[in-house]
Each structure stands twice: as structure tokens, then as C-alpha cells.
Length: 245
Image (cartoon, rainbow, N blue to C red; front, side, top):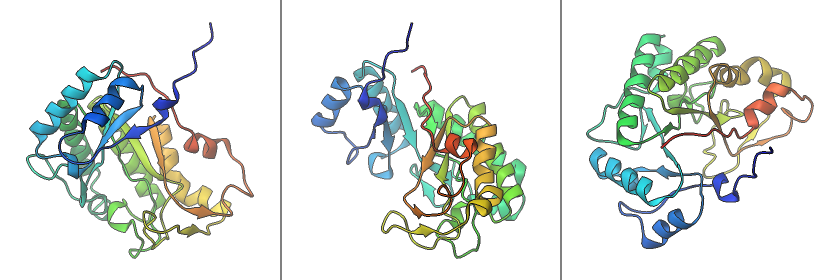
């Protein structure tokens, strides 16, 4: 028996404005089989309010949803108050604090699960080249082996709380100074350099069975044009996983 084709709506994760979702948004969630809902700081008054909102969405939607959030530590935390907040990835990388990273990601994931979040959009797997890189504060650092180890530990720590992880931002924002949210940067790295450096943390995430991988907005003319590799393709694929509410 062949597997039925997924509804197109499952390819979309949606967000909304403000603390309280509009009637139109609620109707959309109830009517169409979307993939999930992402929460930003604008949607969160407190952890209790967020948890209650997730419960409301669960009751409303006739199908399981991904409930996603970026709770990385450092400066990228959507929940700002009443919730454990840890140092940036840079701090763990600079200090080779492997146990600290494990603890931070475990506690964060455990507390997110209590609220009903089932996907933490973390860890950052970007390998930076200099401290001036756009993503420097959010990265575990410049050493491929150290960054790969910390990415692997972070994914495993998130899994220990029985929620999903998402490595980002493939194929990597290292050696880029432009904010990809505002303009399109170009990654001029060769395929070989990418393979032996920037790809390694993403490979580590794949080896640790990361469920998702977030791509970024950038232009690259060398990485995939001159070299094809099945592992690269794995990193770029959208992976589908069934999950329970």
C-alpha cells in the first residue's frame, strides 16, 4: 500500500502578530492542515500564557502540529522572562565548556516541553571564520572539531527531553558579515573547503539524528556547482517525521 501524498499545507509553518491570534488565523489553523506554528517574542507575555496558547491551538487543530521556537541562549531567546536563560554558544565554545552546553540545552528543552513546545530551532551549526562574522556571537566558534562536538552534544541534549532539534543555518553563515534577513550575502567558499570545514558541524548534527535543518538566505556559486555529494543532499532535504501531540 503506497503512502498517501501529504497535504501541501504541511510544508508551511506559520506565525502571527501579537499576543492573541486573530480570528482569521484561528480559522486557518482549524480549516487547513498546516505543518506547525512558530512563536516569536511578540507572541509571548509569559511562559504560562504561551503554554495556555499552545493548549488552545492543540484543541483547535484536528491534527498534530509542530510548535516551534528559537531558544538558543545568549541574545536569541524568544522567552525573555520567567524562564531559564543561558549564555551564548560562543561562551561554551570559547571555554570548551562541553558539560555546560549539555546542561543548558537539556534544561531549556525540558522547560520548553513543559509548555508544549516540541521543536527548538537550535543549535546553530555555523562555523565562523573570524570574530567579525555576522553569526559570531551565536556560533560555537572557529574550530571545526570543537564546533562539531558541541553541535552533536546540543542535539543529543535536546533529544533527551523528547523534543525535536533543528540545526541551522545550512550551508553556513561563517565568513559573512551581512545580515541575510536584510540583504543577500554571497558565500564564495570552494566545494572542497566547504566539505572539510563548514559542512562538518552539519554532518555532526546529521550523525546525531537531527530531525530538521534550517537553510539560510545566501548566494553560492561554487559549493554545489562543482561537487555533488550525497551527504550535502541529506543536509538540504526536508525530513518528515510523524509525531504525537
